[in-house]
Length: 603
Image (cartoon, rainbow, N blue to C red):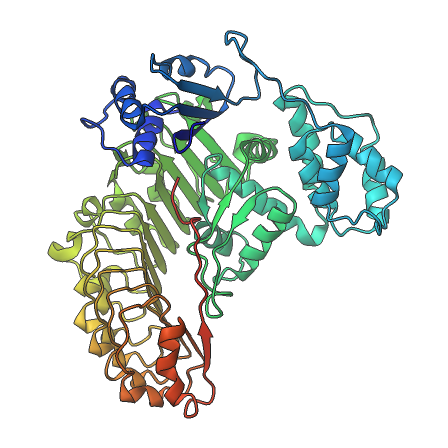
């Protein structure tokens, strides 16, 4: 009936009318008449967009509307023919005429879902059926609970099932509200001692907004420092897989070729149901504020917590501190003492943001994540506070205008990794007087992703001679790499993925004798490999999947790539390698399958 005119919006616990409308415009590819400055502007322009996609019937789905947000629904009501609104919520709104109350799952459906979640076979189950029925009845017909409890018991011995049942045999569990649901969900957080770190990882996910797509790379950075997990992320991804199995989170992984399976997770994301985030927050808030090892704060407007504003304030002992502010936050920070903070997560929505003053004295800080959740790029002030931090190793900036940072660029001599996601870079670094080798002397890794205005890589980057990994992905306007890239003599991994305007690799790449992985996949404009590519004497993996213009014969020097083990390409490019396979005895040609995957699309 509605064909392509179904508009889906996740409203969530903290709705933002302006962002919702902006996303609706983006969804249909329509530009607003003028820039949306306020909620009133947004609502005024929405009928224009709805009329534009008519006159066919239109269905607007407002999903996950929380109690107290029903006033929003009136804003989206317009006198437009064949325009309908469907609302989903945990709370019934009596003021609306048509309400359909979803029932809890019946016994048959509940049992089916539980069997699926626990990976049980109907006929060959080794668990007594009576135990299964008792556990399913205890789940009260709630799909989320059935999935979580089933996942937590998956693969466990029958004795464990019966033991768990005895612990839960105080009574039957039925839930009429979130407050009754949370205590029951805690039962799915029972981990053996050797897996207690997985519970810690679960609670760390509460540092981010509910339903937010959390980059796996962020979590790898956090957990490498908090729990000393490997920097390549293998153990972190394994923990996320376990959380996914237990239905405590959802890990979305892109298909990987052989060169990426154990090393490249920048395109993978984690999501978490908002009830599960509430569970994580509940678990993290059981101790007094000063004693919590993770402190997660949500600030609305200028309403700072009372404890923060007290004059005789005791230091907080948290190792992980997450502060989220909304678009009405005034930027007035009260000073706190956070001497033990190792990971600081700052989520905000304003166009101008000031780093809190207490950062300057956070001497144990190792990871800084600054994430702009608003619609426009943001300017950051107080960046110079970071220069005195002796242990800061990792910085990730999301949707930030880097030009504001260049004016106050300071030496970060302990920094080992910097990640820029959806940032405005442009020609920012052209007028910087500070040399990269001086400002970032120990930098080992750079990630630049979805920076759509990046045209040319800064020349000064080539002076950071300790750099080992350089990732530039989805920067479609990038057209040239600096000629001096050959000075990065310690570079081991170079990934230039999906940079569609990049036409060639500089010949100086021949000097990268430690390079083991070269990834130019989906660089559509590259038509040839460097003439002296054979001098990459340690190259083991070459990914040229999606390089559709690369049809010239391979350079003669490719026969000198004696260490080359894997080439990833399509069928046409595979033919280019056939003549030299007999010479390169270690070589395996991996023909990439077409992977139509839209997981990378941002919500």
